[in-house]
Amino acid sequence: MERTKKYSWVYVLVGLGYLWVIWNMMFPLEATSTVCLFKRATGFACPSCGSTRALLSILNGDFTEAFFLNPLGYVGLFIMIIVPAMFALDRFRKSELTVSIFSKAEVIVRQPCLAIPFVALITLNWAWNIYKGL
Image 1 (cartoon, one colour):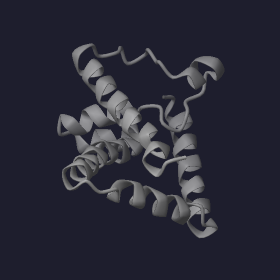
Image 2: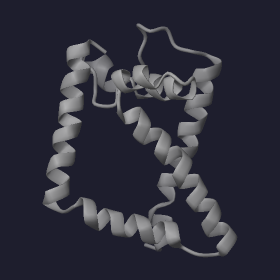
Image 3: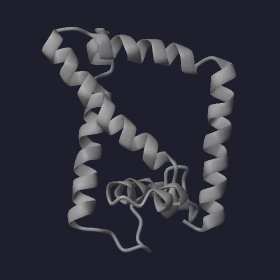
């Protein structure tokens, strides 16, 4: 598979993320409603439950609320800013820097010394979401 096509799904997901945020800014969900399929099926929050509300809180300048809703909102915002900027830079320079970075990052995060703490943090976040009753 061509390297640029391998990571094209990232661009699609970021684009869908922007559409989702814009939709939620225009038509906010009620605090009690959810679109999370995992939560609808099990009744329990998933690790990313509350990320949209966290991201919207960041955009409104309420950083503390965002952190307590779901710290992954910060990760999502970072990705939604950096990935399009990197993609635009690649197009401008006619390079594949983004694909190269993704390839290297993929190798790095598969190392147990990083993967295990990452999975542990996501699991703790998941437990925290369930504890908070998200």
